[in-house]
Length: 515
Image 1 (cartoon, rainbow, N blue to C red):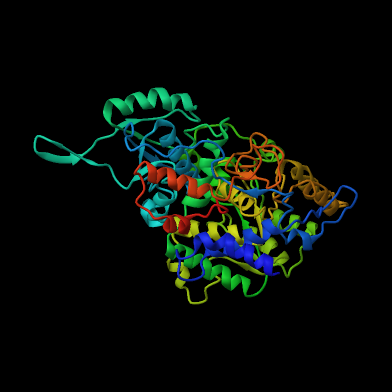
Image 2 (cartoon, rainbow, N blue to C red; image 1 turned 135 degrees about the horizontal axis):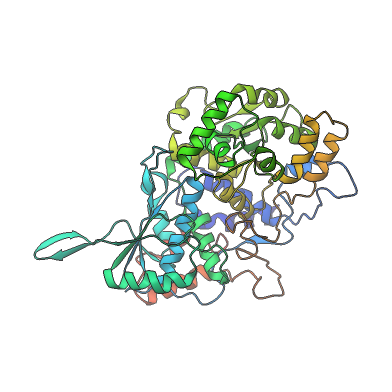
């Protein structure tokens, strides 16, 4: 036990001094430490049994000797003092799309040897939120953590012309979707050199996810899992909710994606009343491109979000009972209580970020992106996380990858396509063997353990193996970097006169083990 305490102390030492009291970041590090120190190899379920061991599901998934590491493992020079110009981006979409876009923006800046202007977050009509990057994320931490990778400034610089000072104007460009690296090193770079700055908008999914350069992928992980830290008041708010939930024991978080925008996008209308169907139809016309969608076909392909009742039936078939505590991360559920009633009857112990606080103070502070950020952190730290619809632009997409990176934390990820015929049979009156059929489907999931990424799974959903390593790996590509990796990077910055930070400050941001 003494050795484990020493290892924990060494692991979290790099974060000492950054926060005066226990925060979500500290909780994450503690959870990670015990996950990585554990050498559990228990198999949670096998095809030889029809039962799922819930006690094992409540624990982290077997790591198989892997641990997260996004530190460079090959030559990674610091950004030069002189760059090719400035890069501005506007990150559109919700929290998940914006996080992915920020990661892509940092990588694009590295590829082009550009100075990145702090990314802009789109205050779109859905969020009605103009908090911006500065209102959601810790700017100082973001810039400091990535100083080995790119130069970042908070705003465009001023230029002096004819005795007057004005902001440098960036040349606006619309990058192609999933643009290859070559587009940034040719088309974008040429305009940057000509104009001094470029403005890429919109910037969602504008850089290819699958890049056959592991160091570039690891940079994305450094951004996503280390540099992008929510502001202290958001972390404290999340911490309060998690502590209140934990005070009554372990809990599960479910992202119940049964909202108007997703249902309209998916084209899943038939289960609603004529009035509700008309509302969804109008919403789809206003917000999405015309497309003929057939409900039965969409559902059979697993394209429809699970209903609240279907979520409850899956959990019940797995063995969870009505004492299970569930935190719901969701917007306004379409159809209201009519659809929630069956779920609530199965699992009455339901909470959300408003109900956890009896004073109502939390509800006043959880609007727009901030509310989404709080839900994100609670879902990240829950004992179990279950997404009901995890498409590439969905809130759950990034969370799945984040939980994988933070110690292979348990994920219940239903295969909607495999479950669809089982639910359809049940609705037609064929209920014999229903729970057994659901269990057989669910036992095929990895529950959050390391697994190969297969298209269309996103890199942001599963960054294994690029952002993971093994201490005793035979292959150099899989071996964990040396413990003095951060000191090496820091020394290289200092030797080129690029760092204003002391080594102690460097270690207070991200420790070698943490990266």
